[in-house]
Image (cartoon, rainbow, N blue to C red; front, side, top):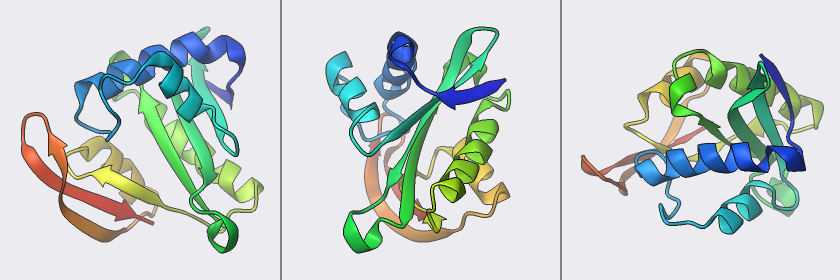
Length: 157
């Protein structure tokens, strides 16, 4: 598997993954009806580094890395990850996580913070905990899960 900076040619593959994940409504607080244009504008916005995980010419996942805040908070990174449903559980997320931490260090970030990790997203929480992230905040009932109702959201650092 190769992880590389995304290019314009990856937009369709990224949209397909983004749409699939967001439409499920169980891990991200994006509008499930978000348009392709809005989604790609968010994923490729200024001050954002966009990557894809590719194997045998197929994009299996994508992530973004950017400053969590502006100015005095810009030394802390923020990131978001999405893996195609048929590639979940195959190590793509973990490889992207490790790549992301290396990239964050290379870019001079001093830490990485996740602002909104849905508590029911056990695979993501497991990966982050394994590589040293801690839950530093618990936002009770902050996510309206389509099956479980209002669930907690974690801030992880």
